[in-house]
Each structure stands twice: as C-alpha cells, then as structure tokens.
Length: 214
Image 1 (cartoon, helix red, strand yellow):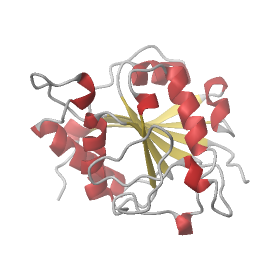
Image 2 (cartoon, one colour; image 1 turned 30 degrees about the horizontal axis):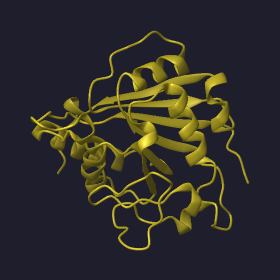
Image 3 (cartoon, helix red, strand yellow; image 1 turned 180 degrees about the horizontal axis):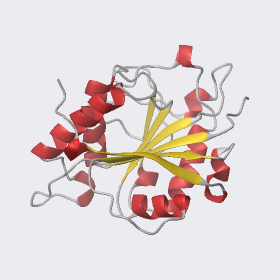
Image 4 (spheres, one colour; image 1 turned 135 degrees about the vertical axis):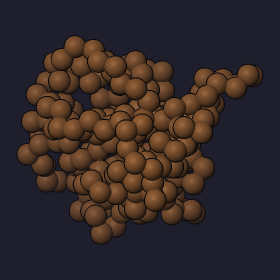
C-alpha cells in the first residue's frame, strides 16, 4: 500500500437546520437556508480538488447536507455515514477517520456516491441517506490495489468539529458556523498520526458567503 507524504483534511459542519416540535436532535432536518447552502457547497466543491472519501455523521441534517452537496459537486468518490460521528469526541472523529481512510479503492474503481443504488455495502452501523450511496471500508479492502486515502472530508457537528480544529492547528477555539468548510494540510504520513502532526489551515469557505448554485 502506498502512502502519501502529506494528508489533506476537509472539515465541514452540516448546513443550517431547524428543530420542529416532537423531533429528536438526530432527526432535525435542514431549513430552507440550509438546503440552499448545501447546494452552494456542492457548487464550490465542483471547482476544488475532490476528496477521495467523505465520512459523515448519520444524523439527518448531515445526510441532507450531503444530498444537496452531491447534487451539485459531480463527485465520484465514496461516502460513508456512521453513528460514530454523532454526539462524540474529537478522539472518536480521528479514530473513525483512520479506520475509514485506511484503504480506499483505486480511482478507476470508485463507485459514484450520488448514483449508487443497489448492491452497495455499508460499514457496521452505517445507514443510507436519501439519495446518497455509500461504500464502506470493508468494500475498499476487497479491491485489488487499495491504498490509504490522502484527501478526506469529515462532515459533522459542533462542538466536536471546533475542538478538533483547535487541536489539530494548535490555535484556540474559534466559531465554526453551519455550512463552513475548512481545508487543512497535515504533515502526517498516516491518518493515525494526525493528532501528533502539524496541521496548517489552507482555506476557509462559508456557505452563506458563496454564490448560489446554477
């Protein structure tokens, strides 16, 4: 398995959500602004270097953020949704990242996350989002030529994302509003080394400041 000399981590907080009566926190949907912002983020991602893997919480607001994002992004990598990124700690985010990114399929065998329909395997505890196809690490490990991903997006929640960002960059806690994407470059050669390595903030994108998707 080949290793990249550095890692790129894209941290995305889900888009703006609402909280209807009689709705659990896990099942909170996006509101109108959140749906627009999700599409704006997808339009943005279309012009950026794509991650090889997207790993997200299985909360409804994350699933719907990815629905909107993937509808605009022309993304052909893998998507994994897991309960391990819901109401948890930065340490668990890093552990799940290392597990999921350990082995990904070569680029010519990646399935389409937006178009996957049948026969899609998932990792333990993962569940489909509406319109979001998923393949898990167990699938990638069975593919000849599988390797460790060098560019991964994590989609999750505060305060965990804010705490993780502060820990990786060595900076103090900073607000991370909904629909904000932060791109980090790390000197780590393996994802399991991310906490001990140095990470530099490369870019910050806020959905509310982005143009509407076409």
